[in-house]
Length: 302
Image 1 (cartoon, rainbow, N blue to C red):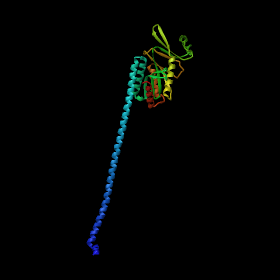
Image 2 (image 1 turned 135 degrees about the horizontal axis):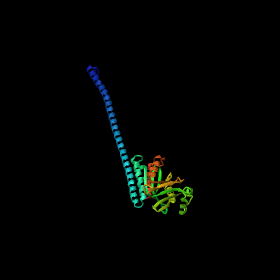
Image 3 (image 1 turned 45 degrees about the vertical axis):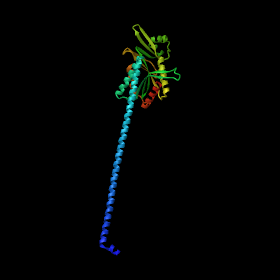
Image 4 (image 1 turned 135 degrees about the vertical axis):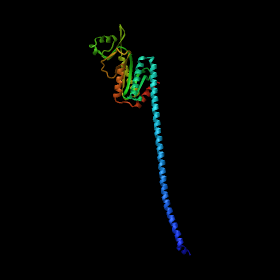
C-alpha cells in the first residue's frame, strides 16, 4: 500500500511541484536577502556620511568660534593696553609735558604703522613710566618710555629742550671749537670723557649751558638692569631723545664714537630710527615673548 503511494503519478506530481516551489522560495530568499543587505549597507553608509559631515561642520564651527573669541580677546587686550597707555599719558602730561609729547608721538607712530598694515597691534608695545624696583627700594630706576618690538627692546629717556646740542664732546674738539675748553673748565667736566652739552637761549642776553653725560650713563645702566631683571637674551637699546620745544632753531653736532647709546633729536629722527629698525632688523622676539615681557613689567608696576 505504501509503495503504491510513492509510485502514484499524482503524488509524484505534487512532490515535484512542492520541490520546485521550495527551490523558487530559496532562490527568492537568497536574492531578497542580498537586496536587504545592500539596502542596509547603503543606509549605514549614508548614516555614517551624515554623522561625519555633522561632526566636521561642528568641529569647523567650534574652531571658528574659538578663533573669533581669541581675536576678540586679543583686540580687547590691545585696546585696553592702548587706552591705559593713553590714560597714563594724559596723567603724565600734568607732571611732564615733554614725556607726554614723546609718548603721544610714539603712540601715533604705532597707529600709523598698524593702519598701513605694516605691523599688527601685537607686534609693538609702548609703555610709559615704568619703574624697576631694587631689592631694598633704594635704587629704583624710572624708565620714561619702553618700546617693545619683535626686532628688539628700546629704552627711551626723553628730554624736552630748545637750542643746540654738542654731543660726544672731548678735548679732541678743542681746536675745532675754541670756546669748548673754557666751558669744560667752567663746568669742571672730564676732558677725556664724552660730554653732551646743550646751549639754550633764555633771552636776548642770556644763554644757559646744560650737560647730560650722567644722564646717558644712567640710561645705559638702566637698560642693562632691565635686561638682567627680565633675564633677556638680547641687549636693551638705550636712546636719549631730545624733543624740541619749538619746531625749528635746533641743531645737533654729534662727535660721539660710542655706539652703545643712541642720541636722537626731533620727531623725524625718532620716526626714521624706528622705521629702519622695526622693518630691517632681525627678529629677536615672538609676539608671545612680547606679551610675557609686557606682563612681567606691568606686574612690577601695579
